[in-house]
Amino acid sequence: MTAIQQQFAVLPWHEDLWNSLLQSEQNGRLPHALMLSGTPGLGKSRFSRRLAATLLCTGRGKQHAPCGHCQGCRLLAAGNHPALRLITPEEEGKAIRIDTIREFTSKEPLTAQGGGYKVTIIEPADAMNTAAANSLLKTLEEPVPSTLIILVTSQARRLPATIKSRCQHLHFRPPKREAARKWLSSRVGSLDSELLLDLAGGAPLRALALSESGILDERLKRLGELAALSAGEIEPVALAAAWKESDLSRLLEWIWGWVADMLRIKQGGDGGMLTNPDQKERLQKIANGIESKELYRFLDKINETIRGLGTQLNTQMSLESILLTWVDGLNSTAQSSSQQR
Image 1: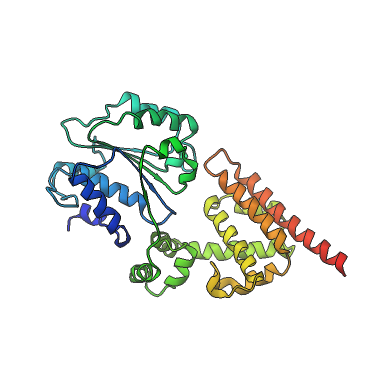
Image 2: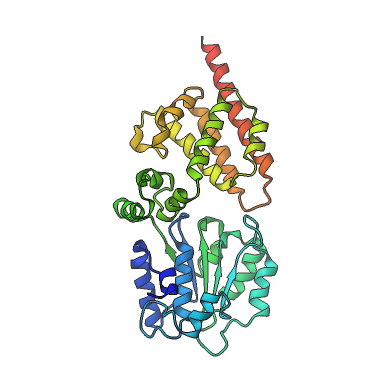
């Protein structure tokens, strides 16, 4: 297996989607636009790049994989294939602006020089602002032969219906638990693959990333700080400042999961139902100090903030608002308990 074949090897849970799509390509029925959607950590980006590598390979014949030896594969390996365009935000978390899409649709030929495919990958597609999406729509409405546009997104709901309706939709789902555990266990050694999959929502690549980056330690630290806030040992504004440099998307997801687990615990759920089963006792202790109605109110606040990701969100102010809402819920619970005594 060549380096490029290894880089773009099909993940086990992609096989059915991959084989179906390549069958369409061999029968001349590959669509002009694809939308790859599903939760993070399922390999959508990898799938899109494998597809691009396969279509741009000039030596594969009828094989379903890039050969790794032809000029197309060598250009891909060097990162400068002229028929592949990657459109991403200029900065992580920022929007893809209309100027970027206009450059793609207006200033570049949509067909590849010398025949063959031209492939454009837009990721994350949901980062396109309204003007950019409208600009892309004109291109999707007038497909060009041998040209493929791939939209990769974990938040398909944020894309306009007009965009989605002009793409063939491939939705990625987490693999069956045992298959995911087997794949992950062979890569994480002695680490708890079950816990990693719980924390990753069943997404194997995301679970693998958790095992490699020290994120598990950060998760425990942040939960400990939330416990300290709940105990009145730290002020919300000070904690927001400490959290400011964290990955906001990941932090919000953790907080959402902790609060959801607190609600499950209050409703009598056992450890097998929890996203964070290893932290059941700590979550139980925090949950004892806040009413369920306040937890639901707090989840609404988290959801509101999550919807704002990808916009011009002020991280410090957002975290302060979230943590002040949490403290307000604790105070309301304490006041209600005092009145009942």
